[in-house]
Picture 1 (cartoon, rainbow, N blue to C red):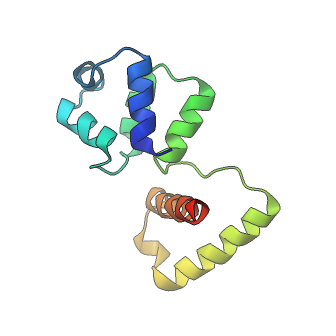
Picture 2: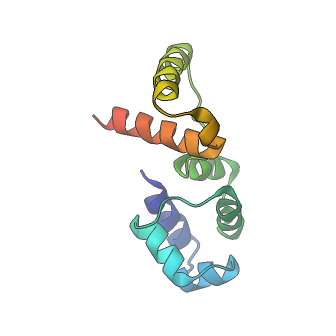
Length: 119
């Protein structure tokens, strides 16, 4: 599952058109369309908050929504934490962490994990 599919699923479940959701969040229909089609990267936290409020998401759905937007890390077990530390150390040697904000780092890390798990 990707953010785009989750957004589409939640919008349809709530019986909203792209225009109705966009208007309720002070966004454009074009922006919602691009998010759902995957032509735009998942949005920043403020927009995810607006979307989740207007989609009436449960706490579990919000967690998934934020996770697939790259805004919260998944729950890790000890082996995954060790693997994450190894990956973080590798990334740190390639990208100066001071040049990245935490949301960008988490999004990159989440994408890496999703790509790795898809193999």
